Image 1 (cartoon, rainbow, N blue to C red):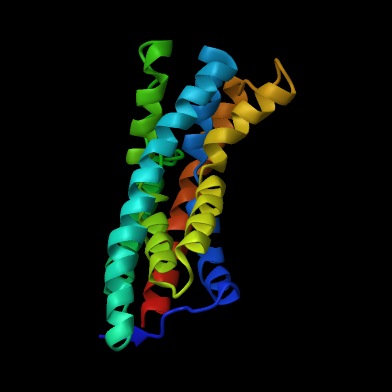
Image 2 (cartoon, rainbow, N blue to C red):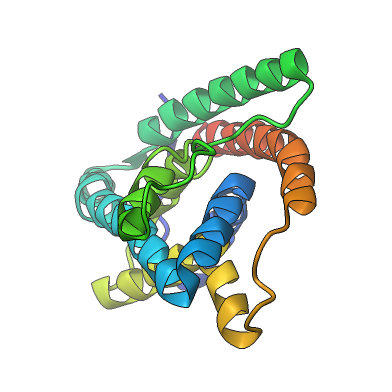
Length: 224
């Protein structure tokens, strides 16, 4: 089993997780769902959707840093940190990318990468819709778990770990909060028109597939 030295400096940690943050932030369908939430519930509805997505990220990020990260840190104190978690996540993510590629090729239409394209039944369900959209976001969650446990496994102070995790979480949530930010700054211009929506869906399958394949390769290579 491959092993690697734990990260002890902030620059080292940032260089390690920066590519993962980029891959985890690629979520075209989450962006479309967020835009739909804003069009149905306005800025308030957008915040409800963001809160649902953030709830999933907070739970997974806290668990990964506090549990997986602590376990990795314990190994590091005794000998050297294991990268078994990254290896499993990388293989799973690459396999999911292959499945997306096959689905995209078979249908010749952009495949929904993480979540369904169904609209919420009512504005009151926008928070729950946000939870479901992020909980089924299979192009983002494996990479986010990996970068979170790397933050936890680093030798930095817990205050620094928390700050880095918060910043990474905000970046990963960009597809969820961006439409709401646009609606707040430019009222009436945040809706995704049907034509643009179809074009985004057409290419979302390709973007998500590439993100999965590249993210999987990066996780496996860095775990060796």
